[in-house]
Image 1 (cartoon, helix red, strand yellow):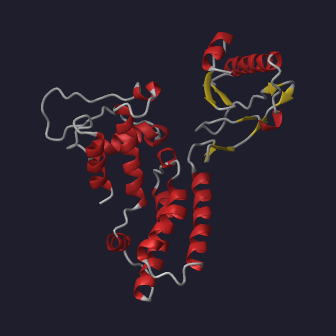
Image 2 (spheres, helix red, strand yellow):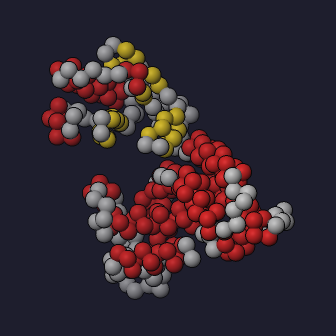
Length: 294
């Protein structure tokens, strides 16, 4: 079912399509909105029936995203069966929760990365190459902590520290391999990062966020829906601290954590001396790496 076909069917809800996966979503403020969403589900059901495409109801789920204590728990149906309701859902490797805190996702990737780091530590007792160990860490541990980081990039310090602690454990192991002893308890993280020339995970996430914004602005990511949400700041006169993007004051944590808002905010704060359109792609990437990863 294509977007064109969906619009012809008269579906009023928002639609996300990926391969054979379809998601309908709608802002629900009252029961009338629930009935409208149910009507759209009925249209999908009838289209599948007429095209001999059976639906697996067991794989269909409904989920409510809300920052309120109470929400409307409407029983949506397909083929006269109630669609199961869930509080967390994994989509393309990212675990979403109903409050969009991404706490379950961070817990899951930290557990997975910790197990992989333990496997590396146990099986590299005879390794003497520092670069080989860093390569193993980057490939099998850091990759787990950074997949989809633009989406789940945490705002709260507790989650930032939770992620950094895994890299800290690896750096202490690396120091042990080099020195024969572990660093003293309470060793400062910046010193370990500087010694092995490894950027913090926070800086890497900030770099990825800014790089994502630059790719949208320079049309390396073809997504008009995202581009329409980006507004450039035009100062009335020359200022000493110009901002590239115009940002409304966030009145909720949802806006503060939004990937686009977060990326533009980081760019304004850290890259005021960079013209996002004035350099080649390679030059811009090099400039951003110097800002965040050096």
